[in-house]
Structures are given as structure tokens and as C-alpha cells.
Image (cartoon, rainbow, N blue to C red):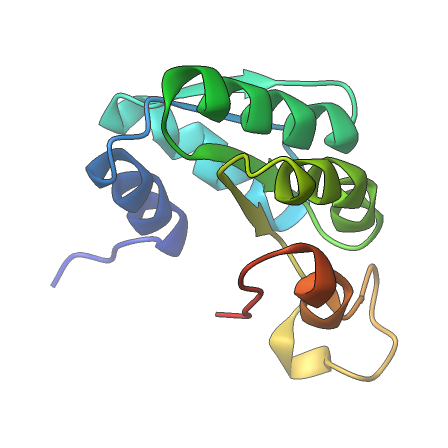
Length: 131
């Protein structure tokens, strides 16, 4: 049986939802999603700061009347995207943020860039989950 990477499945799921563009700053646990995206007809747009990714995705989704997608690496990358998420929430702009995290086997041990993303986003999103 051929191996399938999770990043490939995420990129494919984004395409299946009719999303044609995503925004992010490639790094760490999410860079492969942006790498696989073009294979499924999704255009990745790199930005220079995570806040720009969330604002760009929210605005793009609003203008296109679809969900905007921002891909953020782990730790501070996710916290940098919070302002854009808050603005999108307050202005009813559809936004999906896919944020990375440290290794699950190292949770609650202070691993590199470990943050609790779900609680941070609970009050400024309709849904915040960890997969």
C-alpha cells in the first residue's frame, strides 16, 4: 500500500471544498501543505508575516464569497495570526486557520514552540479544535 502524507490530504481537502488560494508563511509543521497545494490546483501565496496571512485570507474569502484559508506554522506563528482571526470574526468574514503545533508526544513538556492554540481562539472563532 502506498504511503500518503497528511499534508497531501489537507491540501486535497482544501481543493475539494472549492478553495483555490491559501495564504501563509511556510515553516515547520505546515510547509508541506503549501508544497502539495499546487498539485491539487490550489495556489499558495506566501506572505512575510502571519498576521498578513490571516488578514489576506479573510479579505480574499470575503471578496470571493468563499472561505479564506490561512496556513500558520507553530507557536508564535499561530499567536501572530490572532488579530486577523479576531477582525474576521467581528466582521463576519469566513476564515479557516490551519495552525501547526509541536509534536504530540511532547505535549505539556515545554517542547519547542508548544502553545495551547485551541483555548486562545475559543473566544474569537466559531470553532477551535485540535486534530
